[in-house]
Image (tube, rainbow, N blue to C red; front, side, top):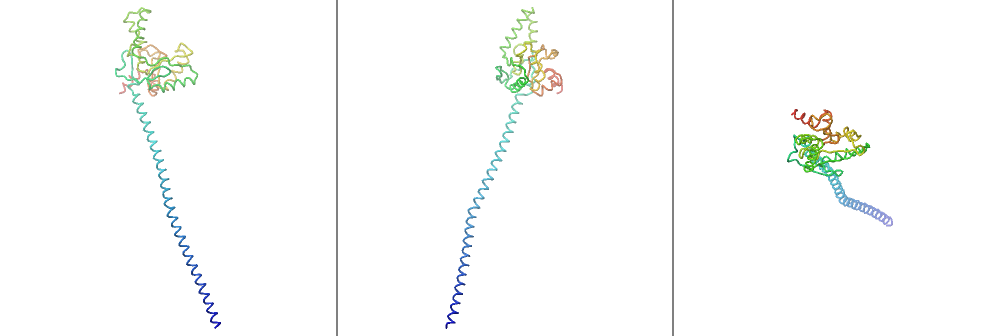
Length: 277
């Protein structure tokens, strides 16, 4: 009996051990399942967050690229508009307009006046004029703008003063005085200064501008900024005006450079262009 009890006791122990092992395995399976479920739950939470983050980053990058592209396109449009606006202001008919006793200022001529150094002139020439004046200052010149736009009324008074002066001091008759006056002081609507594109200069160091360092510098460098000496010496037959060292006219950088290379006055250059059409 004792042996049977011992065997029974051992069998019972083995069964208990097997049962305990099975329980442990079952518990382990449950734990693995719990961990797997927990991992899946975390994944279900993390994955949407990651996806949302990726979408947000993509949106930010896309917005930045669009903003940059829009800015570049808008900038290009502004530059094009600005260029078109300048071209509209500086069309050939205005830049190369000849105003003389035989060519009056057109009745529909439009001018946009602004002030530079206290002198009125067409707004469109001020930027280049300012660059030229600053360059002259850097080179040590004492150059100053003495005159810009002149109204028709003021021009008429100047013209009549010159006619009276020639009659009184030179003894000219009225017809001769009128003819001679127009060579230096044209009547109203026949003066370039009414266009706002002409500028007169003075030297602060030399009262004789034609012999000044300022004139030498201006004559050599003015074309870089679109200005030409309007009535040069030795060209009276083409301009019908006496040499005037102080009178410069804006015609645009390209035109000024071409006139210099061809050694032409504005009058000659316009005739040259017309002959090639």
